[in-house]
Image 1 (tube, rainbow, N blue to C red):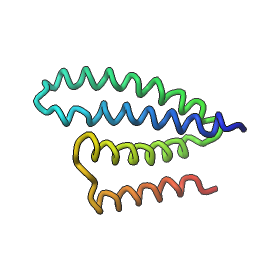
Image 2: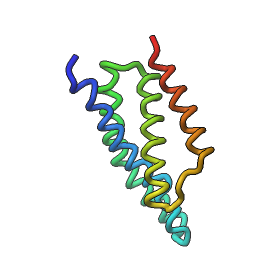
Image 3: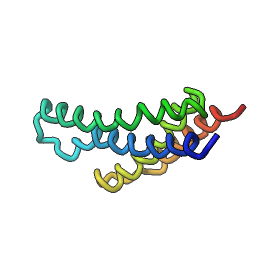
Length: 114
């Protein structure tokens, strides 16, 4: 096993989650935009998410199980979202958000136990 199979999926998942977060939550900064426009733009952004997510899972499946890939993806999603919420939406996370995220991270860690 090389670093390629182990680390490339993680990098692709990070990139994928950045696109996903903008597709799912970026429009909240533009609440006056028509919903149809928001949907079309979000789908366009999500296209790039899939371009990264599918190879991440395909390559990652050579090293990780599907549940491990999903757990990893959830942790990456939370970390990307935490930065996005604070930086882009100007909505910093509170202690209870961090506590909830920490519990999800613990759950993802359990998935990796053999």
